[in-house]
Length: 174
Length: 321
Image (tube, rainbow over the protein chains, first blue to last red):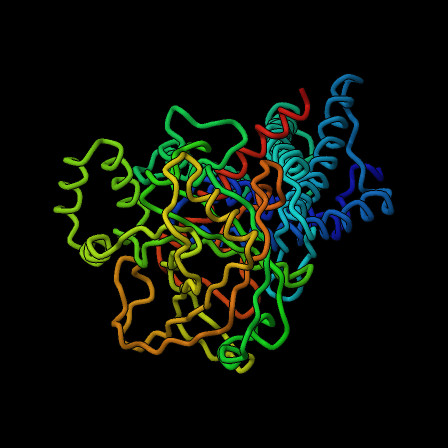
């Protein structure tokens, strides 16, 4: 059966790479807005640069998702459960795109160029706009909280499939 | 499952560490600075200030040390802000022990330089946790502050400066110091730790009033008569100097390089003037200037960001209402 087969290698790689990078992004974000320690500046720089990498991977991932027919959920559940799974996945995609975009916009409106590993920089607004900065910055924080919640739901779904349903959902992604 | 555990742990452990550690956080620091009387929409520290605009006119003397283009010939416009210490945007000017000047160079869309300077040439202490305790002591009164200084011998250079300092009659006549050291880097990749200060070039204009806005009124009146000028002077470190300790003064005989003139032409006291939107985080640096490991310098980004985020949110809510 087509839908029982593994996800494509490209999708599996981007999934796990993004899992690790998103964990780094959320942890580094929570740490760097609180810490007064010397490493804060380095983590801040990494957070911005890796955020850009995540945005690139996200774009690739969307392409893989829709170009390969095997990259579909099993949908072996009752209607409402499938809908919940689809909604969580859909929202995760929205937030994975929304996080880097609001992050970049907050820096743009605060007139702070974002350097990507010193290779190149995103330009910043010539004049800071504190209102637009605040909109982007507060959204960035709210989306982060939403993404953490969705990741927990996603992990809950994995546990459910693995231990209760005992199907091959997890295997398809490994 | 092992992988999931690892992801879980990597997400939760460091966050737990942050919430439980005894280190001072940016939020605690800004809470302390704003106290119970912060005013919505204003900076949590240095709340009272006025925007100025002007330009820097380099003399080329520093261009061998750094690739920052503003030190090559030509002029570089900036948006600056004079301010006094404290969380009160209407505080009486002459009561504040510290006066400040910040400048922002918009060098190009991808190169910004924010500089925040104060009247003292050094910090009293060497790290943000002691700085926090120093502010606690200041808020607790003269006795607590005296006890704090006694318990911290590294405050000696600061206390020596304090004993010799007489506040100027004008914001235009103060010397403003970078305090923290930075590295300059040239196109050959050579690095040199430096501090800098703005050296006033003006003259007294007679007695100042003693009103709450004495200093800002004086500055406005002075600017009506002509620009306010400073020399931008760099102090070059030697091998033996510790660039990572902001409480330690470097010896007097270090080489000083005048890089050019800062010319301030206009002042805008308006609460919505352009500089009020700027976060003068001194770690916003262009290529050719990098941060030292100075723990107080390194602590500034997170603290400035927290203060900026709070007042920005208040301004946003004001607009939405």
